[in-house]
Length: 179
Image (cartoon, rainbow, N blue to C red):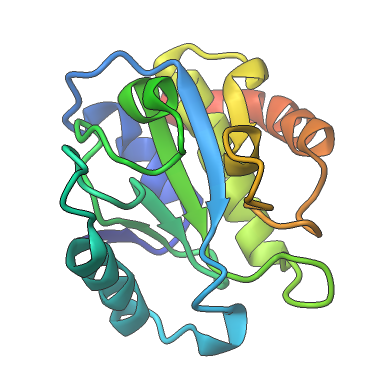
């Protein structure tokens, strides 16, 4: 599993990561479990990947999981290759044409809050993905957009419009790193 210490290092490598899919959708998720207090770095990232491998339903034709995990300290993991079509978003098009980004934490009301290091990393990563794949912020969706029984990325995560605006403002910064 690849890991970057920060979003700047990750964004420098985004366009060199193998990918043969046409990316049109970026989907933000939260882990729910582990919550922020349960995060133990590499061990937890490997535990998430192991869980996805272990619990894949037999009727799924593609692997479960996300392409990126954004840790509370701002580290970014790549547990699944960008070329992988994943079952992650409760929607065939989002799975086929999307990149899934998992933010570690339970961001439902009354639980975790998005800290500054994690917010910088997730906003910067989405900005980098927009630059790399030539997407506007309208390509950014939340998992709950595809499933009524989900709050993902959490009922207390920033509203989608605010998230998109913060990513839009970060795109020039990401463009300077990637190009």
